Amino acid sequence: MSFLSTAHRQVIETITQTEHTPFFVYDLDGLLAHLKPLTEQSVVKLWYAVKANPLSKVIQTLDKAGFDFDVASSGELNQVLKQGVCPSRVLNTGPAKSKRQIQHFLSQGVRTFVAESHNQVHWLNQVACEHNVQLRVLLRVQLRWPDGEKNPLGGDSLTPFGLGTQQWQSLDINDFEALNFVGLHIFQWGNMLSTEKLTELWSQMVPPLLALADDLGFALQVLDLGGGLGIPYHERDSKLAWPQLLDALANIKAASGVEELWMELGRFAVGEYGHYANPVVEQKQNYGEHQLIVAGGVNHILRPAVTNQAFPCELLRTTTAPEQSYLIHGPLCTALDHLGRHELPQDINDQDWLIFSQCGAYGFTESMPYFLCHELPAEYVIEHGEIQCIRPAVDASEYLR
Ligand SMILES: *Cc1c(COP(=O)(O)O)cnc(C)c1O
Image 1 (cartoon, protein in one colour):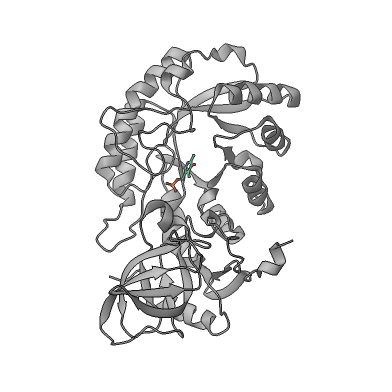
Image 2 (tube, protein in one colour):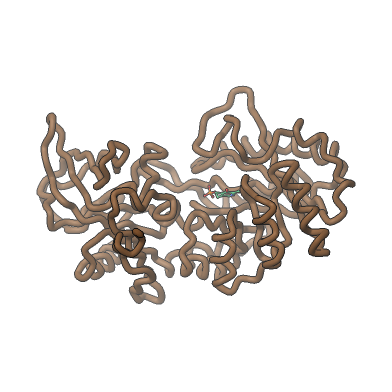
């Protein structure tokens, strides 16, 4: 199995004829074809979690496919509005909503919020009163399980996302004249690849959430399950099937009795539609290991250092040379800059490019681009079969002062 199709290989070969530094390429045609069936159903309303990939062309593609938008900062909001999206189609989640940020969101016309603390509820109400508007508000809940697992999103650990059910109990929803409390939001597990496991987690959430809504005195109209749908990063990983997930979601919807089920998708929406192309600087041997030093590392794709999980990697050039095991290292002067262990042909040299796949989500904007003053990667798209450069590589001289 390969994560790199022949068509994508050809596109990347074409780009490397003129590009000499690392770049991302996103297949918008493939993305649109993948997204359309996701929204063609009436079980779950889908928002796009913009942090997964905020590139203009990616947002435009999600818009075409019928997604609305979940943003977590003024920067993300501005980027979405700049693509012509109506603010009524924007949802604001995130643990750090300052009063100043709330002011900005209301002045831009956003009316739907996930509140993650008592202060957020108070500030949303205060600013909404000043603007003389009514807001739709969901409360974000953080649950704990006795036999919990760890997860990059927190899983069972204490996180800044929302509050426990006990902490929400003291909220008197009648104190907030400008807020309509319509639902609850919960999201604690990322990159899940099993429908059974997701169903089990979601099912466990329903009773405590229904009890909380009841205690607070509002009807649970909306249940927002966040994101967390995974994609394979390794050949042995399984893949989620959307029809099966929809069945599971329909059951959760029925069990909770809500009018609307919401999810904000990031990884599952866009993750499989991006590649990161990376020139090889050199190959060397060290303490019995083969090492490859490449031009781009965690300055462009940080995720392997955060999750300890590599992106799948292939050599762009086809060769019949046998494979060997390599450790791949980026250009930064820190051992953190490690892109994993990979089986690749023995004859790799300084003319070669490595292609990392499944990089459509949590790629460039999750990285640490300024460390050591390398260039920012270019971003290309394939749209209607044409290659287009959306942002050329940016030299350090352009961002250093
Ligand atoms: C990041 C995020 C998502 C998207 O998560 P994925 O696992 O990428 O789908 C959804 N909801 C919220 C609130 C998030 O912060």
